[in-house]
Length: 428
Image: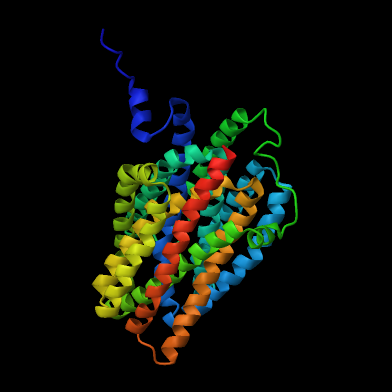
């Protein structure tokens, strides 16, 4: 007698690597990340163009302002985490961001101090981008177990990549009809849709954990500086910091040099904005394809070590190429490959690293690492590159100096993958 054919729902579950009962929360998480990154991607080309219009010589200052803003925001976020339930915390964060976008719409349409509004927007978006993504993945690490994370986080990340793919198209389409400030309203609309997804996921999480105390949705009591303390007291979290610093140093160096070359090759703001939007679209498309067809399979086959090692390996080849042939075409190709590797492989793997830490570490320490440590790496790298160039160093020489750092980065990736596996086995 022939075995019964699996249902369409079961076939979808098998394709996505999920259980049938996980499909509903997986769909809501996918939609949540789609709306989140679509809202951000609508604004990213505007931020990159403002970086050029504000003057390349001011970029290190804007990165420093971003870092200082992060330092101020970290204890505030810790204070909120200690006093708000998970649901209220998320509503507060998104309500604040939507209000800010409406304020920027009014400021941009009134043309009040346009240079300062542009610079503040660059800093604000650089801060908010990391905050909302960090909070999203903290929420996911709180909802799903380590075992679920290895199966589902690649699919969830594909939702974000889909949003990052659609966002630049919306930006291009809207700017043909409406002025740039309207993009603030479009982005706010997508962030508002995130609230519905949060409600559904929070409801599912509470139903699943209603018999466990403390409930995952309860407030995280403790000092508002707990994120810093927890990070400094944990060798495991400090290694994650080291991995992230290596990532941000390479990303910032590439961003500075690519921005410089774009400003030299293209003198029209519209042309530069279209180029940035095209790069974002290409990155989003390749990231989406990788996440849908490769990420889950790579993590399940090789564990975390392969996705964590991808960026150090590709960066060694990229910096050797820059040292020998520093052209805009090479920067563009290297930048796209690096961003695809970060979003499609490294980012989902890094989020799995946080599934084996405490709830307080997932929110407070993770937020500190993803925001202050990341933007601190941006600011320090910006000044370091500016300083060594002032002393006479060339771009090729800096690229050669980055190569040994990539081997340290690869070592951290290997150690973190091994320690996560050990922690996961011990807790199961």
